[in-house]
Length: 99
Image 1 (cartoon, rainbow, N blue to C red):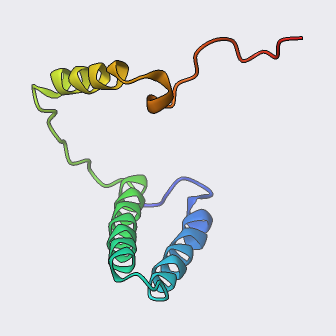
Image 2 (cartoon, rainbow, N blue to C red; image 1 turned 180 degrees about the vertical axis):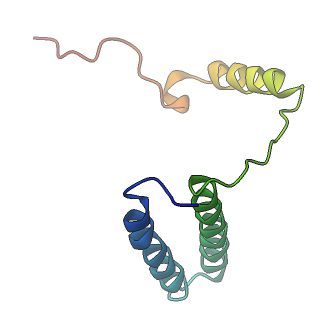
């Protein structure tokens, strides 16, 4: 199962980079940050390994969407919209400079 052209080289650069980030985690003085970064990198490497498999032709693993997902998304959007624009990081008004 060959990957589409170009991905072997790109992933060949990506995986060592992820290893370097994982190694850099060991140098963090904050133990909590160190453990979080190591966990994030382990998860990321697993995701990229799966991406390689899928690009190589592996069958997908279907994941069902929970039936309440649209309501949860709507509730979250409503929550964000109730915040003041500055708190939510939104810009109000024109972005053009006024002369």
